[in-house]
Image 1 (cartoon, rainbow, N blue to C red):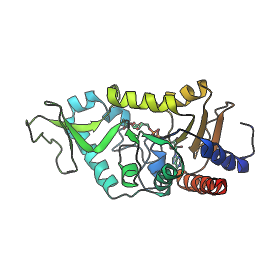
Image 2 (tube, helix red, strand yellow):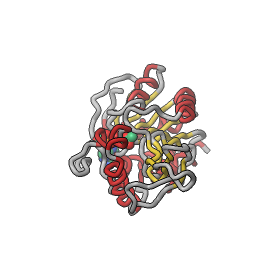
Image 3 (cartoon, rainbow, N blue to C red):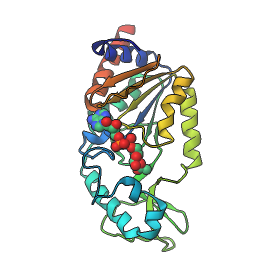
Length: 253
Ligand code: OAD
């Protein structure tokens, strides 16, 4: 879209206000202002490991205690953090618009804490574990054990997270497909687009002539007729967007 930056937020608000079915896709950048480091930004490394080295079934098979140590470190960090204005503004959008679903790649639960509904946690949740023996999943908040076992069968527990090289849960996949199929507009926020399948959702919507609004601190450089870039922090832009949509809706009545 060929519009000046100061008009882009107004345009985005108008588009979102008219949306009958909006899908929001979030990534680590939306939690950055809560104090949780992004994966590919500053402080993204833990003990010099990249996420691709630890978030894999192979890493867990060969070094389960190391992988649990990393997750326990992150659980401790995340459990001290709270949702930021972006999380709350997304929940507010769900009260202003007829149909808003949220797909998140984040595993930190902050959208949940902020009260968001219609939430799909596509990569799992860091406060859940799954038994590698009996397959049961459970809430698991403890952080002191680097080799936890299942309380039902004593099999080894693993974080209930989708790792690199693993398939998403088919139930989650079909929910995502349905939401993307029915959406007329998508807001994608705080994600580098480095990890599939989420990285493919923008093109899927644009190919089907739907509008995509991106919120990121870095410009993507993407060009498409129905694509609009809002450069800045999610914690500034989402509340502003919500305020503008609210004022449009108030004028409608
Ligand atoms: P990344 O760390 O790859 O990207 C974070 C994005 O957020 C970057 O594009 C930043 O420019 C942007 N950003 C940073 N601060 C921001 C802010 N305040 N407001 C808006 N944008 C901001 O994170 P993801 O794309 O979420 O997988 O990473 C995808 C997946 O890779 C993660 O879900 C994780 C990881 O390995 C698993 O855990 C399975």
